[in-house]
Amino acid sequence: MSRSQSPVIPPYLALFLGIFAVSTGAIFVRLADAPALTVAAYRTGLATLILAPIAWWKARQELRRLRWPEYRLALLSGFFLAMHFATWISSLDYTSVASSVVLVNTNPIWVGILTPFISKDRITRLTALGIVISVVGGVIIGAGDFAIGGKALLGDILAILGSISAALYLLIGRNLRPKLSLVAYVIVVYGTAAVLLWAVVLAMGLPITGFTPATWGALVGIAVVPQILGHSTYNWALRWVTASLVAVSLLGEPVMATVMAYFLFGEGLTWAKVIGGGLILLGIYLAARGEET
Image (tube, rainbow, N blue to C red):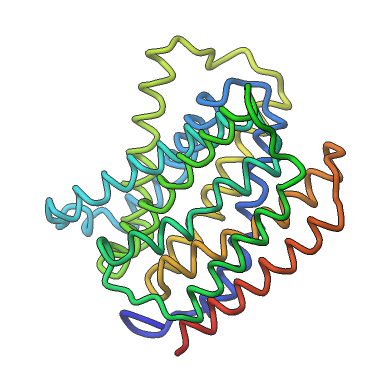
């Protein structure tokens, strides 16, 4: 399970808490009455501002000692994080929460394909089986919401691009996290993503002010809960577990996000989604067992 000493808390417990936090992302996006890219820029920008004092206190010496190859990888990770948010959040303007979350969480497939080229980790047969079962469960959850053609198809394509970007973000993090503290890593990655997203927002002339109090609350919420609590939890776990397990764990997001969307937006909760959710949980379990072999 590891590349270093034992963690303070079990990584599996951290991943469970991360699933819940990240699952709120799509809900906050729906609650924010603002352009998708503006939401993404505020998500990473506010997270960076909140974490900056902590990074100055805890990690400024580490950041000064950081070598260029490590900085370069962290900046690249931030680029793919920005791509992930820009494409995934934009997809929610064109397709349902369920479809978007399912497609963006096909990243275990891309992680499995790219692991031999980027990470030194080995994917066991049990983990590979868990990936397949989880992805099948995710497809079952969103099957009733997939639409062919028009805006729904554009949303699906954007979600897939977000999935590939997320896979590259996780794999780079798996390589860097054993070398860097969590605070040093996330401040560079989130900060890079924020700069890139804000540059795009300003270049496009998108609105950045004049929002309702509810929207401002959603923007703060998406920065604190899914970004700082959710993504940082996954980045913390990457020091001890493979990117494949983290990617499979992220598939728990469609389960929770679909339930939340049912209660908040009235999006359907069917037996197909219940069965798909069960397969996802089984896949996560098998992938976790595969880590231990």
